Image 1 (cartoon, helix red, strand yellow):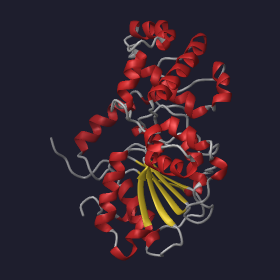
Image 2 (cartoon, one colour; image 1 turned 90 degrees about the vertical axis):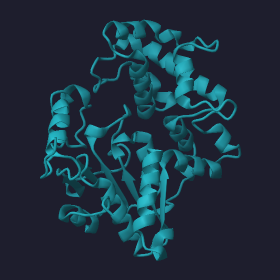
Image 3 (tube, helix red, strand yellow; image 1 turned 135 degrees about the vertical axis):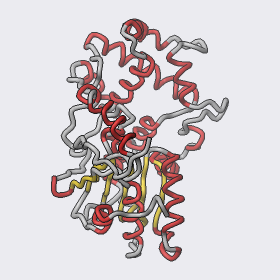
Image 4 (cartoon, one colour; image 1 turned 30 degrees about the horizontal axis):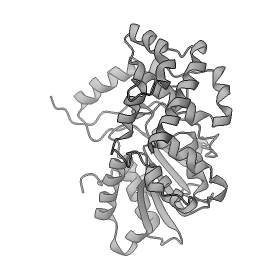
Length: 338
């Protein structure tokens, strides 16, 4: 009940109707997830012909939202709302379009050795288990180390950006593309080696029977033309971590119209290095369909002042140039505490 309590500004957005895709940009603790849950219930009360989808990238967040929906949604309309992570959504659709055993081939844990994809990445990058494909990255790694940058993480993020920006047949464009949004620049003379390293990583995943979010999204894109509008409304939480390909899939899954897609996020909380463009993904967002909430209702003034000061002193180097998200400064809650 505490998590779903609404303030007037939140309730205003819950009740508002929009003529197309909408972006709610809200600071941490502003109640974005609450708004997503309450909007979904409002749509369900009208008993639409197709299901309402609440979508997140993070599986643990989808489980939390599922509990909130189960708690707050009237039983007579609960069946109208589906809550799922994007990874599981891709698996469900690949089950329809593929003849192979999807849960065995397209999972983030190997079916043979029960290894999580993060362990497999570590094996690949550190050239364990007789696989030397990542050696092409060694000189770049040493360069990063000499500057106290964790090359293993930095290069994995660069792989994610490339895969979310270019299809496989377009990847040579990466060799000369302007690359903003990195604290330490990715030099052009490194890029051919980075592409070779990425090719080796994708081969490694294929060999051990494992896949990550971007691989799963790319695989589902093979069936893009077969996909239909399966949902009456789609509500996306933590949209800042969705990439270009994932947003294209979301656009495909619901028909254009009133309240078709509602997205909530905060650029400061972005945890991935993916390329993202709402316009390129078919989600045009005029300013008339952008909403913001600046008030943090959850944390004390002292916590917020400390946290935001770190970001405020560094965000020019940490955030990619992106005019689709506004960087919001939080309005502090009314309470103080040590």
